[in-house]
Length: 341
Ligand SMILES: NC(=O)c1ccc[n+]([C@@H]2O[C@H](COP(=O)([O-])OP(=O)(O)OC[C@H]3O[C@@H](n4cnc5c(N)ncnc54)[C@H](O)[C@@H]3O)[C@@H](O)[C@H]2O)c1
Image 1 (cartoon, rainbow, N blue to C red):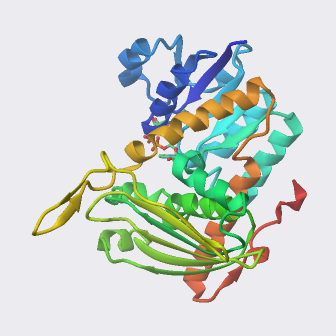
Image 2 (tube, rainbow, N blue to C red):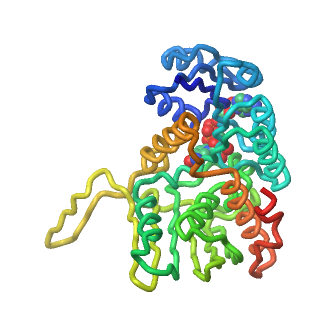
């Protein structure tokens, strides 16, 4: 069977998914929609896209399309998920599902009612190194996990206009780390305490956001976690984690262009980390779409589901509330538990 796919939103991430999907023999990327298509004409021709439209409903109404990739801005996701589900399409939706737990819940209910598959774009779950760490934890190699440390620093902040519509650091950036924390520890976060600062650029503060944060987590299984974020690391994209347990520890380091270390009488040096997410997570973007396609074609479970999407959003909301109030926030105070799904 050939899986016919439509892409909604052909910006940075939408174009990456097009490239990766086109490498999968069982996939035909038939259609792309974007509110502005003028500049996409020659790109679409080069990618052999048959339908280029400004109206995503053309994709939803196309009976040939089996799956859609929602890669438009976050404030459009929930509505499009609901419409796509009621059109019977399987859905890959970029993170976060929405900025509002109510909207996310409604979208997940529509997916459940329609019986279609939904994968949320937490691509880091598919990073080979982080995946290996999770596997080691699952195999009991480090014993009972006690402490998780996630370092997650961007090489440079996005522009201030982006910051204003991003949903804030926790919803835009740390949300990947919140998902990673649940994925590695395999237990729900029950409490969040967040500290934040504006140390990178005062304009980020003027836009109502922070650029530096330390968040501590408590998990239902008793483990503790710490996530630290910065919007600017002078040496590049810093993405590391370590999980420590009663039998040992497992850690994943940064990826580099090469692993050569030069040692001289003056210094020891090696390559900087890969520059940003497109480079560092290139393989993860390939694997997340491959596994989504396989899940549909072979009717297998989705690795990163709608429940994973809403749980990360709940943690992001709790972190924001903790930052604003200065006290730890229990997850049970934030939205509904996943039990309703
Ligand atoms: N998983 C990741 O690593 C990752 C990385 C970047 C962005 N994202 C997420 O992907 C989404 C898009 O981000 P981006 O950086 O690609 O943004 P972008 O601005 O580069 O692209 C968004 C595109 O959607 C189009 N668009 C807007 N409204 C639309 C509509 N109603 N129908 C069709 N197209 C529409 C815009 O014209 C634009 O081309 C966001 O939700 C973001 O959080 C995820």
